[in-house]
Image (cartoon, rainbow, N blue to C red; front, side):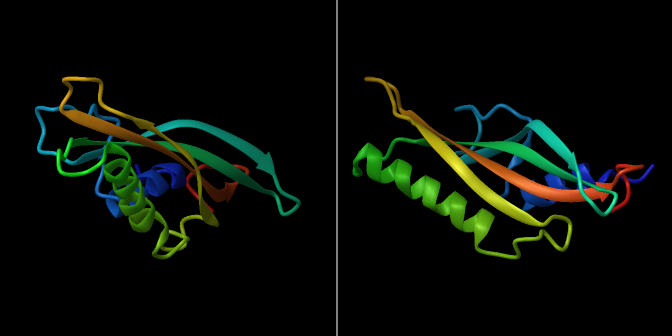
Length: 137
């Protein structure tokens, strides 16, 4: 069976930002590493008989602390690289969606003695499907 439009959107976004799907980013992996999770979705019927879906994706980035950099500088650099990868290209993911919105982030600074840091960012991707099937636009 073909993938739903939602699945195609998630795959395209994960590929764009070089993230694994629904995985745990850990210190055992080569760092920096990214993972994306599809958390929630809301949907609204449009006047044209379509569903306008807003998909919330959370992206986690983990990296080793660079002792030569201030933690804030390093974290903001990781976030900036992610935003550039996510937003500085075709905003429709090859005509799969209407738009990609960055909605916020949280920085998880390392505790004393910890050698990794994490950045969590959220995106909303708005896409449309037929009101009858999730496989058609």
